[in-house]
Length: 119
Image 1: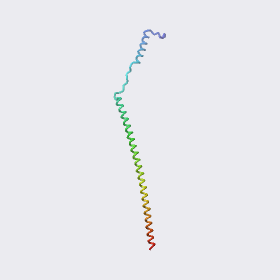
Image 2 (image 1 turned 120 degrees about the horizontal axis):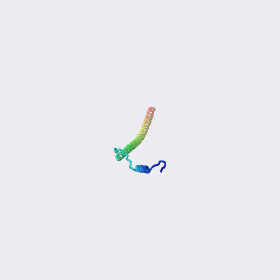
Image 3 (image 1 turned 60 degrees about the vertical axis):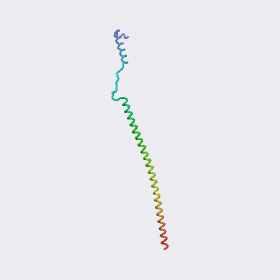
Image 4 (image 1 turned 90 degrees about the vertical axis):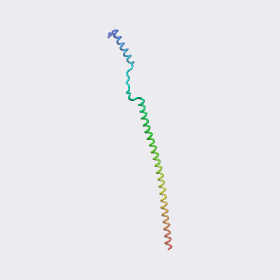
């Protein structure tokens, strides 16, 4: 007790009651702040799940598209190789024909020259 303030018994009882009241006030339930009832947890969860599903679907579609493009590119490369081989084969055949044509002409010319020389 503080002697310098010269407090009486009634004043001490009042301050003790105020302290007890303040202590009890700390333990009382406080009013809660509630969220607006517009969106429930279930709808929020469904929206989130739908967003994840849509994202996965676009990723899967992109993956399928990339795979199809890669396969098409591989088929095109294979077709280009086959066409190049066919062109090379045709070129060789043309060369052989040109050579045989030249040889036949040379043979013909030789026979003609031989016949001319005999006459």
